[in-house]
Image (cartoon, rainbow, N blue to C red; front, top):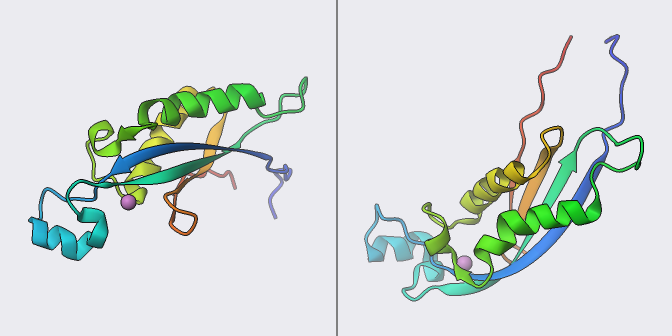
Length: 146
Ligand code: NI
């Protein structure tokens, strides 16, 4: 049994959307191999998605406001980090990695984290490439004391 009191974990989630083009293509593969790996997503010319990005924060409540972070402040931070650089862009021009949902989740996680106050952490960031293709990046758990 731990002597540490159990504190409830409180979370807050914000979802934003943007529209962007991309094409899945690995520079290590030729066109035929890219088409084998990524299917239609590798077709030259690219294609578009209506992306949604959902960020879940975790952290201490502000005793004055009863909130983790102001809604407007949170929404604006996520929009500044993700929507502003990506909306109506070709994501292959925006990031240097292959624009898979896995990579986008990891990259957006870093971008959003830079816009947040240091006492708040991202528990989870989800990228909805389509309603059925969902990718997630998780923050590391803080070290626990025995
Ligand atoms: Ni796609």
